[in-house]
Structures are given as structure tokens and as C-alpha cells.
Image (cartoon, rainbow, N blue to C red; front, top):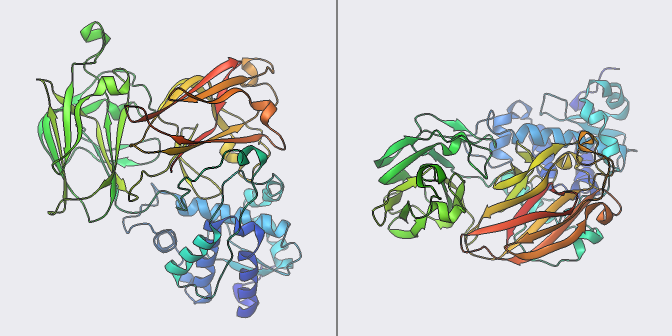
Length: 511
């Protein structure tokens, strides 16, 4: 049977179907799905189907800048695919009796309203993901904190002029594993990374670089003074981006970076690649001391890269929120050696900021970024030392986003997550593996018990992941009121008691 055309159903029927979907339980807990579906349908209703393109969706629905590059930012494709899956789940459960259905054809963004017979006839032309989405609906309640449904509806109204939808805030039930630790962190309702101007400069480099997160770092620019240095060091600890830290600018130098008005977060990247055991006979501490200023304000004084990182040849990141350009529209950064030493810098990162606090940090133990079903952007693994990454084909239960838990870091390992002064909430995501674990070739099923600490504070003691997994494989644990150490880091230690420690995801949220 030929699929029904969008005009087959009346406009009133189409609007009624959209409204019922938006008010359903399936979409009440998915603000980005609601925003995207609303945008696509309203464009269709307005007779602007021809304007529904990836670029326009990125700008108008997700707030991306006009410099949006679909090759480096896949948010539209990722969210459209999740919307197809969410619609399939909805029509396999809550909307199973609906005569009219909304379909987003694969490879397209224009929605189609099909009567149920037409939708079934066209089913085999949908992506395999849509065909297999129904079982995912039974995977269990997503282990997440509250999603601000009212905030998502308001965002849709602001962006698109969708008046008339007044949707109540929905509080999602929490599993027992999550309810034990009360907290008041910044939860964030951002869809992907915060939007705004982003500048990334690779100090001392003569060409651009794309990191594991798919972010483009430009060649060195806007500098005065110093010398570009290329290091032959083979391994830099606590990073997946080895080449990233092999170039640097050294000496006394400055950067005068044009910057639009606004609040920014400045992240300075360092690694001591000159002084170390091979050159000094001991370590790199004391061989490089510097001062760093931004628009005349001292950010770092008597800063020793090796001492701050804990060793030479180790990636070190310093985070500074509430950065603004000077009156001349530039950010003036000065790097000066002290005590006869030379300054060093690996990279400058300037990101849209959040007034008074750091942007949330979300890490997944994988080599690529990920958009979770609640539309948060997760960076690939970073700041780690020790352990290994494993990938599993068998999906976990207890979540409606099993893909998020298909990898983990396991072994005996640490994370040094850079944060500015303040208090933070920590959210740890685990997945219990009930077969042989780690992967079968490494051995048979054994018990895995481990401790987790932060800056010496014990957070989980004798944590038996398999034993804690009740009602599903996914386990989430929280801690609050955490503060950075003197080096500005949350030092997380995952230490085996029996077998191995493991973790899938780490969230650091400002309180």
C-alpha cells in the first residue's frame, strides 16, 4: 500500500495527534525530543516543509551559531534518529491504538502523518533501529535526575513561538539506588554543549587538529613572543590526545584574542615535555615556574606545571569561569616565567560560560562523544590514568539508553578532573556484567568488589557492583559537597578490593 501523504489527515487531526504525543509519558521525560518534534511539525503546519534542513534545525531548534558545521557537530542527525526511535516506542506502547501516526522517514527531517494502515505498509522502509526500538521501551526507567519538562516547553515556546502549550512539570521516579543521597547540584537542561562562540588554539602548532571529541583546534594564532616547540615525547598521561600536547609555546609571550561580549569559561592546557627523569635525573618539579594573567588579573602565580600535574609528561588543565573580554573586545592572556624559568602552554580553550559556576563535566569511558537519551552531551574519556576500556555487545537492563552503558573503564585507575574552587556533586554510572567479566578471554566470572574515593574521602567502600544491581544492571551512585584539592582537581580513585574496579560514566555538577 502506498504511504499516505502528509495532507491525507486534516490539519486539526494532525495537531491533535501532535498534542497527545507531547503530553504523553514517553515524551514528558524527553525534552529534546519534544522540542524537535514540535519544531518539525510546526514548520510543516506553516507550509514551510521545504525549509526543514539540517542547518536550519541546528540554528532554530538547537540554538547553534551561524557557523554551525554539520560535519563536526552531529546533534541534528543524532537527535533525529532518537526521535524516530522514541516515536516507534510510543506507537508500540501508549499510542498503539492511534489511527493516525507521525513518522520521520530515514534520511529526511520532514514529518509525515500516516494512517495506521499506511504506516504499517511502509514499516519495512524504516531504519532497523526503528524496527527494534519497541523492546527498548521495556528496558526500565531511565536512571536520571529530574528533567524539567516545563523548562523544555518554555524553551520551545521561546525559540519557535509555540503559544498555547502549558505542560505541567513531571517528577520522574528514582530507583532506590539513587534516592539515598540528597543533593542540590546544577542539573542543567542544555541540549548538547552550551551554545555560543568557541575558540580553541593549539599553542605552537602550525596546523589544525581534531580531537577525540570531534572538536577542531586551530593552528597557533594571535600570539606575540615566545617560541614554538615540538616535542618528541611519545606518551602523555591523562589524555587520549597525545599529539595535542606535543606542541607548545615557550618563553615569555602573550595572546590577544578577539572575543564577543559575554561570559566565558577559560581552560588552559599544559604538559611538561622538556624536564623530566631523563633530563634532570629526578623529575620536572622546580624547572618551570610561571605567572598567568588575563586582562591584567593574575590567574596563576608561581605555577609549576609538573608539580600541579603530579609529574612531567602529564596533561594538566586549569579552569577559570566568569571570563569576559576587555573594553577593546579582546582577551589578553600573558604568560611570564618566574625565577629565571620559562613559561609553557599547550592550548587555549574559550567556551560559552555559565555565570558564577563551571560548566558541567560529563565523561563516558569511550573514545568518542555521545548524546544520551536525555540530550546531554558526554565527552569521550579524559583525565584518566590506569585501567583499560572494554566494549560489550550484550545490552544492559534497567535503562532506556543501553547504548550509553556499552563501554566501561576497568582495572585499578584514577581520574584527575579539573575544576575551579567550589562545591560539586558527583554522579557515577555503573553497569553490572553478570557473565564473565571483564571480557571472556580474560577469565571466568568472578566477584568484583572495589572502593571509590575523592581526594581521600571514601565514597564507596567494598562496593559489590553485581550485588548492588537490583531490578536492572545499571547502578547510579551520588556524592555531594565535594571540593577540589590544592591543585584544583577532583582526584577520583577506583581501587580494587577483589577482582577489578569499573565505571561507565562520570558527571561533575556544580552545587
